[in-house]
Image (cartoon, rainbow, N blue to C red; front, side):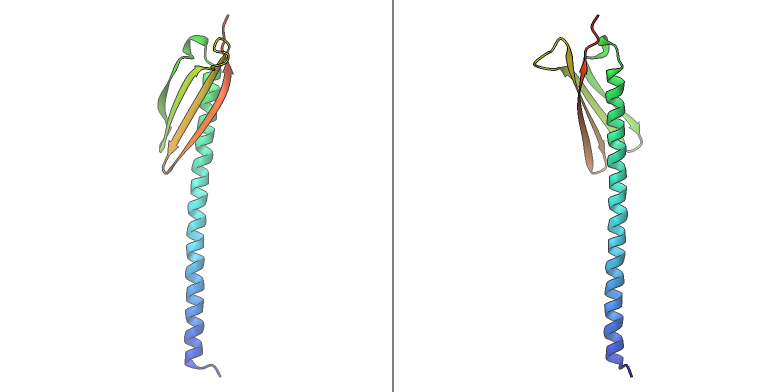
Length: 113
């Protein structure tokens, strides 16, 4: 026969295990949310790099910023590549979201006639 003390100990162990499992579940949900934001930020950065590469030569100076989606802020800068400024550009895009920033750097060619 099981005593009251054994039942209380077993109940305490079960409660501790269930609380630990609940914390693990919450951590998993939080990590999945953060991974989704990071993936979306990388896609938004890649999109801006492709937009800049498709632009004409006159639009390849400076940079800018915008809000491509709620909760995301995107900044970009465009400059000449130091070792070949007449033919190559450096495109840097930073997408910021809650708690993180994603940075992408790419090279592009100048569309000179």
